[in-house]
Every structure is written in C-alpha cells, then in structure tokens.
Image (cartoon, rainbow, N blue to C red; front, side, top):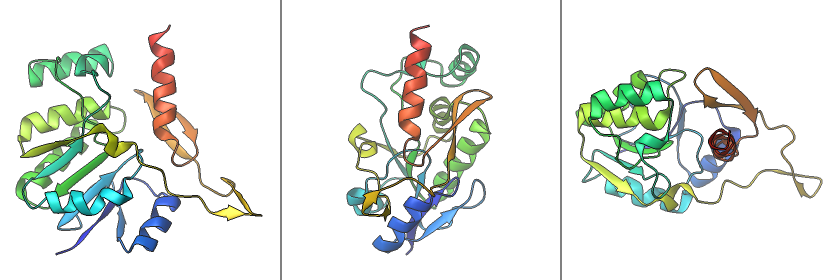
Length: 204
C-alpha cells in the first residue's frame, strides 16, 4: 500500500521536506490518483506531524478535509455569481466551509470521483472552497471533517544561505485572489496573501 503527496504545481520546499521525511511526491493537476492514499496539497501548510494520522484515517473514510475559519460559511466566500451557482447545486449556503488546499483522499471509486469533480468544478479560476462544496455534494463521499488547526502547521524550514534563512532562489508561485486575477508570492505564503486580499475586499 503506497501513500504520498500530490501537488498541483511544483514546490521545491515541500519536495525537499518530503524527501527528508521519506514521503513520495507527485506533481499533477489532472489524472488518476497516483497512490493508494493521497494527500492533495495546494497553497496551504502541510501538517507534517499529522500525515501518518491522516493516512491512517483513510482506512475508514473516502476523504478527509480541514474545516475553514470558524464561523465562515459558503455565503462568505467567492463571487456573487459563483455563490448563486453553488446554491443551485447544494441548496443552502449556510454551510461551513472546507479548506480543500489540504485534502486526504483514498484511491477508491468515490475518492477519485471527488477529486475529478473538484478539479472540473474549479478549473483555473473558480473559488476552491465553493468548488469543493459542489463536488462533495455531487459525489457524497464518506468525508471526515478535520479541525482547522490541520492547516495551521509550521511550514517547512527554508534552506539557509550564509547562515541566514533566505527566500532567494525560491521560485515565486501564482496565487489566485479573484476570478481571473492572480498575484505572485513566495512559496508558503499563499494563504497569507489570499487572506490579505480577502480582507481588503471586505473593507472596500
């Protein structure tokens, strides 16, 4: 039985840490799940000390996903247009938000269907939390909600140069802050950037 990390895009920091932990990594945006037990990572911090627990829980669940911020509902995220579309699918936007940037999935019929629907729903610009809600509603897998703390783990230590932690040499990553609108940031800072722009949007 194999277990490993699946990245949507390359992340040198995660790949180095995973190699040190002995966890295989695959970079793919589409296609069949590469491992029997997978953790899909996209723009959130990896809880390295909880990976073994997550993989073990997949013995009983099709998927595991952390909850979003306390009190955050589907009605609070995404655009009005996408909210309306999501409401037509799930019927009610007064539901808690999941954070699918960290998604444990078993390579089963239901697990693969959840991932396929999520990727199709999200595409390149849709809100990932609303996309996941629609995918989960359509597939109805055995989904285990994880505490939000699972996405608040310490990020992998960066390589040191000249005795100091440095980001120089790290490839910038693209962060979607609104449909059709993206910015660049250092690997590991994706969630901070999203939160910053979301906060700006709320105060306009």
